[in-house]
Image (tube, rainbow, N blue to C red; front, side, top):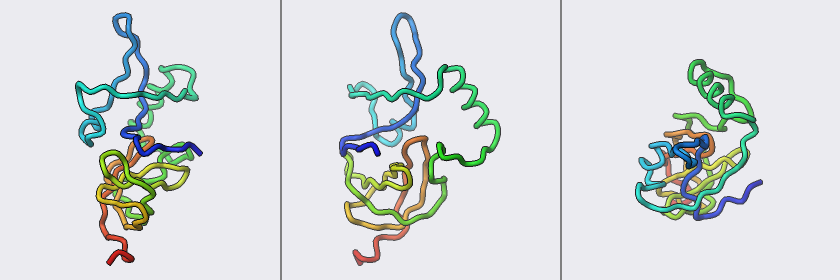
Length: 143
């Protein structure tokens, strides 16, 4: 399993494109909406190779999944938007948000969560490698 450092601010998938002699990665707008990244700032970036051999294959898969409802596979996130579940907050990130891990090490960011808390959360946004949730019921042990 991959060790996720406390300093992790953002996880997303993107395609590398060549533009005017440089290489560019487009950052989804949602990354700035959740204050993970800010325009004009400098960030350290890590890359992981994709299993697909061409960017065209990735684009085709994205269009297919957007055009039709697919059945979940082991590659899909293990949570769905609107899902309510119990999690355990393992650590906090740089922004002070709680970080929980669920199946396959998938990360769920929980604002207001503290290490050791076991709240019930509702998944509000699901991305390929991370989800954002809000606490719907505090850890009963904390009351």
